[in-house]
Length: 184
Image 1 (cartoon, rainbow, N blue to C red):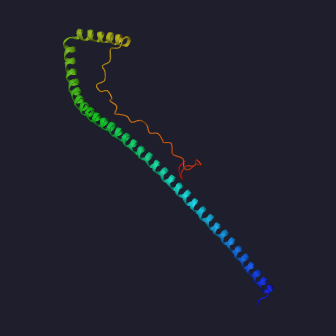
Image 2 (cartoon, rainbow, N blue to C red; image 1 turned 120 degrees about the vertical axis):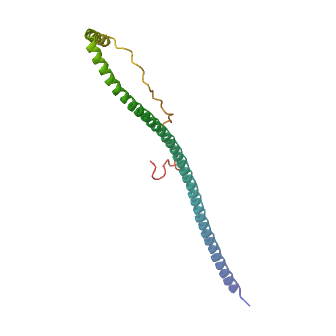
Image 3 (cartoon, rainbow, N blue to C red; image 1 turned 180 degrees about the vertical axis):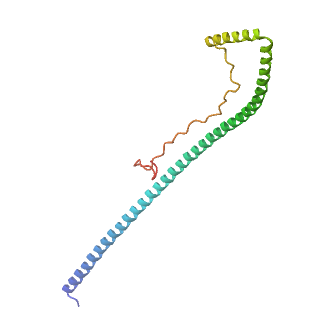
């Protein structure tokens, strides 16, 4: 039969084992809490990273929208330039055609007028002197009071204009106020 001392020693051994088990349980709980804390930190970091990625993609999408607006604006300006160039081309061609015709007519008229003047001055020398005197008087009058000018045959018609482009305000990235890399 076991003595009381044996039972006491056995109880002490059980108590020591229970204390060890309790310490191991506390250590295991602490380790589990540390793992849970690490997992929570990783989860928070993943969520923050995902939110930053979504925000970055939204910023890129907004920049792309502004780029498309600028491209559309440039397309409108290009259409205006093409219209202006077409008008210049059409007017230049019409002017060249008219100048060629008028130059030929003026050459023939100058020859005819020279012949008529020579015949008239030979036939009417007094009239030729009177004409020269009147031309001198007319020149003095025109120096004082120039005659009214004939308006130009062509007036410029401008093409429709597009409002000037403006650089959009780029969105901020995150709460720190920094712009995306490469954007100043």
